[in-house]
Length: 211
Ligand SMILES: C[S@@+](CC[C@H](N)C(=O)[O-])C[C@H]1O[C@@H](n2cnc3c(N)ncnc32)[C@H](O)[C@@H]1O
Image (tube, rainbow, N blue to C red; front, side, top):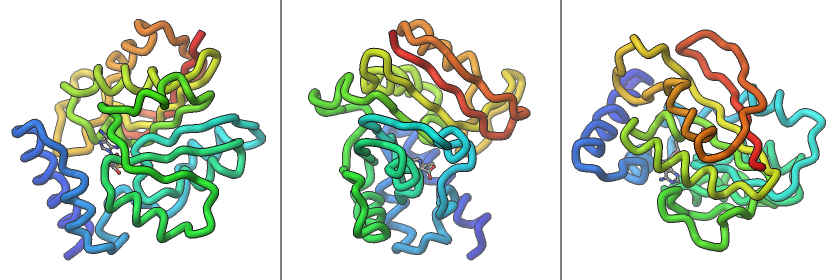
């Protein structure tokens, strides 16, 4: 089975889950049987746009949302006082823990839509990479509200995601974001401080600050 087949399996599960309003990630991670090659988003290294952003920073308490196999959390841990990395999939969390047995990162199973109360406003940096684009558009407003709720006053939210022009039709997952969808964060009172300028279809990095 080649990488196209892995993507098709992910797309099939994502479509089924979208129709039934359920999640598909745990099922997908289990389906891979622990083979990293079968995880289309597992680059086994931190995202280059994150690496660039982290360079030279000193971060406080940091949250990594939808951390998958843990590479971005590990990269952030070299710059942060502490890192809490969570994912809805228990299989992914155990996988990340196996890959990084000596890590200082706290890996935990948690759902962005059911965050523990003590995590609210608890992080001076919140980093989300490729999770929003894996959620159907109808769940994004709630996802953005949850992301914003993690950020402490004066803290920052970093989003790295593929984006699309409004006239581009949505194909199979991943579903690149419309930049206008992210206006929700401005409505929630955060201020956009950075937006890189990669062409549509590619990943961009956007940063917001909470007042
Ligand atoms: C496309 S993957 C990206 C993983 C990782 N951020 C990366 O870039 O390699 C999306 C991740 O978000 C996780 N996820 C999806 N819905 C979630 C939710 N409601 N709460 C927490 N994590 C979620 C999935 O299990 C999956 O690991």
